[in-house]
Length: 372
Image: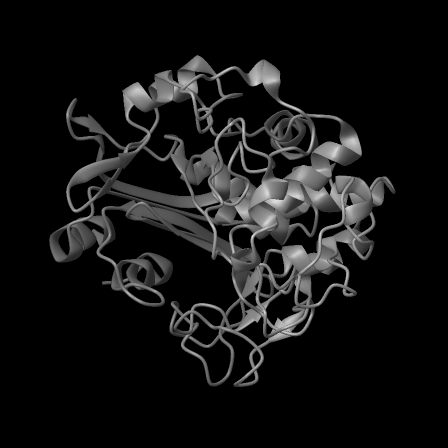
């Protein structure tokens, strides 16, 4: 009933909602089409590009490596990158993984963070437009996708592994998720069930032709040779900022991992001490210390958004209860993964072809609440 209402009210092409608790899935509702051209109906198992929820999954991988003492959240990332990365306006202030994960690095999206296969990320970061000239690292919250290609490059340099494969090893395979970054490491079966994203009625991402093509942004000469990959040279290749392909049912399993404070179905992936870092806001809006993106962000931690902040419009559930997780917004898709730790419940959802709006859209609010 909820999904049917949404389709009538806001006309998304597809909408999926899965609720869960610590024991498992409690309900699922779906409506609409995964592919308009073929008429294929959407299911709760269809993988979709979930946009910025990807960042939260990346953070889990970072914390696993930190537990293994292969990463230090507070070390200058320049050491691993192999070159000095600095905001040119504040050359003595190092940038750390903690600052990158919490969008307080002073990096901005003033340059394109989607980089061709043969372009080094260092080139993009040498442009002063990639940096906030008014605020030093650690002084200001500004949500910027470019933070996550830098994180991916650091992970690659720390391990020598390609980012998408590393995430499979650290997070996706242990959690038994049929998921991947940018399709390169997804199964043929998952690709066949891929959900096409639409905006204004037109496909914007993950058409069959696109999935069959190059899984990264082609080199400037049009070639797509992943054998040219070098660890840390271009952390943007596999879209760590938003390129995770996963189903709503898969997201619900990630949510159960969050409810279990690093454990799901008897599998502990993060120690309680490490997981506690995900439950801790590192920034709270005080009226002048950050950009809230129209109330979408008012408290933020290590790639985690905290909801229902007093004085902010960041409560899509409308009940004032504290929750944490992450939302996503890209190419006409809106998504969310939110848990209520005290109640032991959560919800994962997405909808495609959602009309643009500042902050949380009416579709997101309805999917979050599960009411008309």
